[in-house]
Image (cartoon, rainbow, N blue to C red):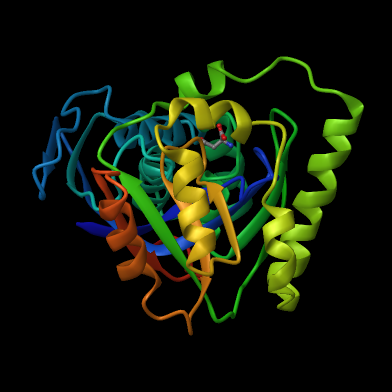
Length: 295
Ligand code: HSE
């Protein structure tokens, strides 16, 4: 059995819609081997498709096809920690697991670049799939076929506090609410902030992050789909977060905090409960610089 560890990811990082993402120290595990039938089980009780619609299986089959092979069956054991439809890259983790595992089953015919491209073709955008595979913070442009990317490792005293609700928000719904056109002014607003985000993160100019996470392409629309979103942003800033943004398509809200802000998660959880905002839990992660690995 091949055992694969895949990190959760947080995409967009505020203004970098479909372009920026980073990997978190929070992991799914998949064990995989070829078989004469499809046998899929969940080690943690998560409800996952156990047939040929399973995203790990579909992605593995795609890679086999690209390599001119036919994938018959597959034995998969999934251990999912990353909650589904919460904006933490659960579907990208499945896609990357399927591609990396299938590539290893075929003795690694495809390069990391090839897998980054295939993963983005399956997902439709690269900002979760690329950091899930590569780790670190990834800046990516997807031209519909190929991803042009840079991965940068991040060594920082920052922590990422994921404020995760007990409800799902499907990416399709969170993309359907976005406008089809934006003004030139709003485009400039976003591109300047997206560039500021990665430059500030990588150079330690954390005071810029509060400005850098603002955006006009997706967060104002998605906030309407996430009850208490604005209040939660305010509470996180009151507790000293450098920047707060909707992680990926949401509904998780991510607060970037200094590691010296030791009690942020506890204070946040307490304040949410005090404000009657129920069903949210706060979890702190670091940045994973390694990406997906075969153990
Ligand atoms: N960039 C994507 C979005 C990430 O915001 O829709 C979620 O898959």
